[in-house]
Image 1: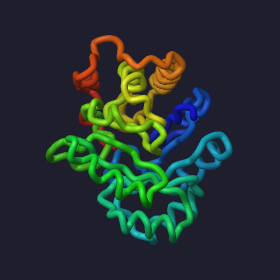
Image 2: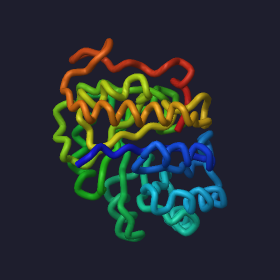
Image 3: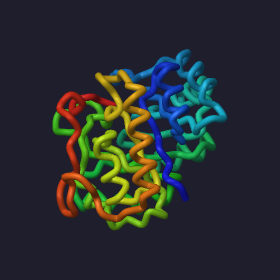
Length: 243
């Protein structure tokens, strides 16, 4: 199976078109008011029409109730729901059953102990998104531009349905692909020039670097990243950029 790449937090026709034109497999829109990437329903409907049939459309929510989810689904008509809050295993199962859409559950990773939750959620979610746990005191659950130690998941079977997220950018994504061989990648703040402001050139560079690394199929990281070391950190300008 080829690497699936998702560009998340899109909010304009220009940046959505850049993502689609560069070959993104999935495009995500954020429905969480505190986020600088939040889109209103009217904007989401317009963007959804632009993307439909060209990439999978993902609606990201954070601990949303059923009424909110129903409103979002009616406006956007997404192909998948991304649950990025503290949704329990039971809640994920209930959402999937009620709305009949594939569900991706985000799980924060900071240590090996956090991997214990994967098995339970795999039983109810169509795929998992493995993200860095938000920094202490962070208001928002993701998109903080922080990477976790990728070596924690280097042994995961790439056949498992997961996406790697957290701190990815055009400069380090090739190392992530070579080390983890993930089935999917998710990027948001790493392709921005400011909080919530996507940069078409960075979107294109990210996709190009990821696809090139996939094609090379090497198991050894390059550059300054070595096995057992932390990944290349995102630039300070993006470290506080929320999801």
